[in-house]
Image (cartoon, rainbow, N blue to C red; front, side):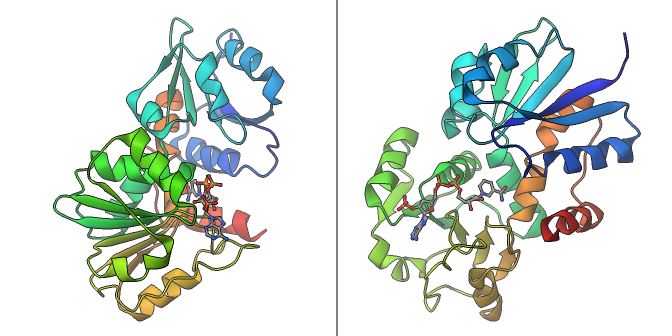
Length: 279
Ligand code: NAP
């Protein structure tokens, strides 16, 4: 039997995934005898594909659209992070073949925020725009980091209220979409967790006149890297953080679990991944 460590990513479609490029970069960098493959898995085949990982000697997989929620029904254990986020993006095959599901999106967001800015959660107030899967990961991370208050604002208010209910934390306050500019008055951290600003989507329509210049502005969109929101925030003198770092940091947990080593997110990796985004 070969000692090559094997992992991959399951999705449908899968051709767009940047994960193989990312993990192969780290494998080479660390001199690890390992492989990371894209697996095109249709929803009806997901259960079997996950169950077969152990006998195929695969250490684990990332999950992408449309498997992140569905997989929760096919795993043996789901950790607290995945439960809070309501989705699994990383599966680890244990020695005895049991499948553990976790979610590294919240850690990816928060670790990148810490690496790229002076943000400290304690005693601070954040505004999060959006109420989809990404917003849920951002909220879960901020709450577990000890944020004082998070104001959640979403075009469809009922989705924000639903998230508030699911997470059940009184530090989450809901604001009306029409008040999204005025709630920025007391905001230490502003996060765009919608798809607005992404290539092919309209820009986020947000007036920053009330935003203090001491605020940190984080856009989880990474195509383009410099969204209109980030450009305007920079002009105000705010620290800004783009979404590519979250994408790179969220991959660290899986890499450590499957291959060992200490993957780093640095300029060399960012440049290497940016080339793929530009292709
Ligand atoms: P999602 O579940 O589909 O949620 C989309 C969000 O965008 C909702 O809050 C939606 O509001 C809002 N939205 C969409 N169009 C809008 C419009 N015209 N006006 C106002 N609000 C609008 O998507 P998701 O999975 O949370 O992902 C959101 C974005 O995050 C995507 O661009 C994704 O690529 C990015 N993302 C980045 C990373 C990273 O690593 N950097 C990780 C995950 C996701 P409604 O509820 O009103 O529709």
